[in-house]
Amino acid sequence: MVPGPTADAGGAALYRRWWLPWLWMTPAIIGATVFGVFPFLNTILVSFTDAKPLGGVYKLVGLDNYTRMLGDSDFWLATRNSVLYALIVVPLMVLLPLLLAVLVEKNLPGIGFFRSAFYTPVLASSVVVGLSWQWLLSDQGLVNTWLQKAHIIREAIPFLSDSWLILLSAMGLTIWKGLGWYMIFYLAALGNVPKELHEAAAVDGAGPARRFWHITVPGVRQSMMLVGTLTGIGSLRVFTEIYMLGGSTGGPGGADRTLPFYIRDVGLDPLTGNAGYGAAVSVALFALTLGLTLLAQRLTKEDEG
Image (cartoon, rainbow, N blue to C red; front, top):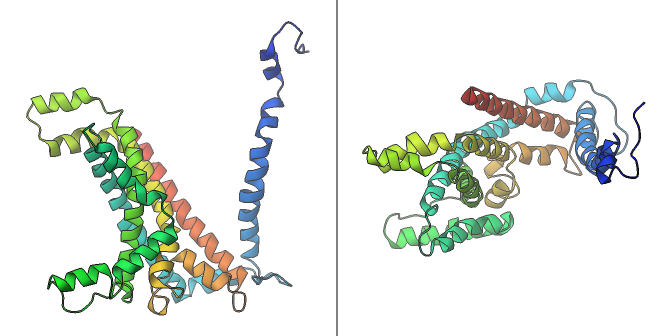
C-alpha cells in the first residue's frame, strides 16, 4: 500500500497523486476533442452521406461520394492546382527566407529596421495584402503602368484575368507574405551554427557561397525540413490568395480553384451544395496533407541517420 502525503512531506508530495497531471490537462483535452477530434470524425461520417449544408434529412450513400470524386474533372483540376502550388512555393519558401536571414543576421547599424521591414507583411491581414496586390497587378495598376511608361510592354499584362498568371501571382503573394515569418525561424537556427566553422573555412580560402552550402545549410537542415513541412501544408490549404486575386469564381471558369476553394463551392453553397461530397473532398485533402507530412518525417529521419 502506497502511503499518502504527510504533513511534513512538503508541497512536492502532491505530485505523487496520479490524477493531478490529468486534471491540469483536462481543459486542453476537452478543447482538442470538441474542436479537433469530433469535427474530424464527423467529417468522415458525413462523407458517406448526402447531407446538405443547412442540415435536414440525409441518408447513407456508401462510397458514392468517393466514386463521384474520382470521376470529377473539376476535383482533379483543383488537386493539380494545389499540388502545383506546393511544388513551386515550398522550395522557394525554404530557400529565400534562409538567404534573407543570412543577410540580416549580422549586427550592422540600422539592421533592426530591415528586420522589421521584412517582417511587416506577416502582421498584415491576408485580405488587406490581397487588396494591395489587386491594386498593384490590375490592368491600370502600378506594375502595368510603370512597365508601359518604361516602354517595356505595350499592352497591360493580364495578371488578374489569365488563369496561369493568377495562379503565379497568388504564389508570389504567399511567398512575399511568408518570407518574414520563416526568416525568424532561420535567424534562431543560425545562432546555433558555430562561428568557428566559418572562420576556419575562410582561413582555408572558402568563399561566401561555399561556406553557405557546406556550413550554413547543413547547420540549419532541421529548420529547413520544418519550414518545408509547414509551407507544404499551408500551400495545400491556400484559399484567400486565390479568392482575392481570382475572384469568387476562382479565376476564369474556376480554372484556378484549389482544393479548399473547391470544397467551399461543392460543399458549402446553401442552394446547390452537397455537404457529403464536400466532406469526401475534405478527406482527400487530409490524406494528401498527411502523405506530405509523413514524407517530410521520413526525409528528416533519413537525414538524422
